[in-house]
Length: 343
Image 1 (tube, helix red, strand yellow):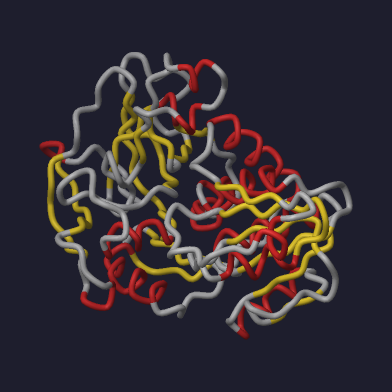
Image 2 (tube, one colour; image 1 turned 90 degrees about the vertical axis):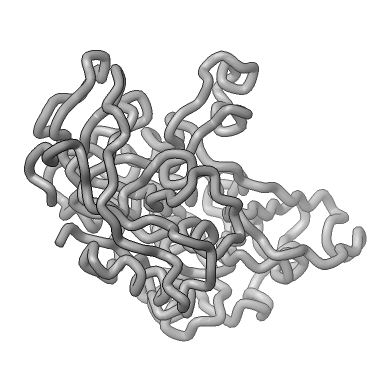
């Protein structure tokens, strides 16, 4: 981890140099200036940063870049090195986390209604502002999370997006108490969401193409684990689609019991094929999207995670190998979650 304020406010960071398939290494490691600290800013020495599929979508061009040569990464764990005059609640030395939501206007009707994830002026870490694939980053204290001492940085980092977005997807799925939940895809977010749902008394059925992921799911307590397009052994009360594969939407809808809900957790999804009303939506089945998260989601999930202590299956990469981590994620060579750790 970076242990001091960088000289001349410069840091070493990865940037999306061009959009291209991850195998072609679209990231480049550079030295760049840090953004101004500002009144609410925290200068953070990065200890670990999770590697999210959203980073992959940005690097490969599925998401249009918002900032030229942006530094990805929005599952950031580190220590505060300096704080702006209005960075309330944090001081140098504090352990801090930065997540996907980096800023909102605070005044629109969505923000006023507690739905800040829908704010038209919302900004995101590693997309609108530079993220955590770096030695140092600057975080708005109003959108940062205090983190407990104890767990290693690399085990906390995935909670800040994979965990939080899984929490919101589970809430959107409206799983009844003791209900039957299907998880389509079983990567970073799904393996945390499964443990959250199990801690609430759910029965979990995992549908994923990876034999290694199916084995992990069963080891974590899933009642069954089958291929992504297989039918679960019983009708589902709710399902969450984590895989960015639109073809699985009708498959998951068909697996729902009457009144069931499918929530789609990703920011990017390939095209959804035509749905048949009677086969996929009738009997009050519901299809829902999930858009980012609110800070209330983040606080609620992190508090719950402290109680149920999920097992985080981490594959560690030195910060200097961020391009390798992204390529491995793209090629489905990561079971659990890839995390960059400070060199």
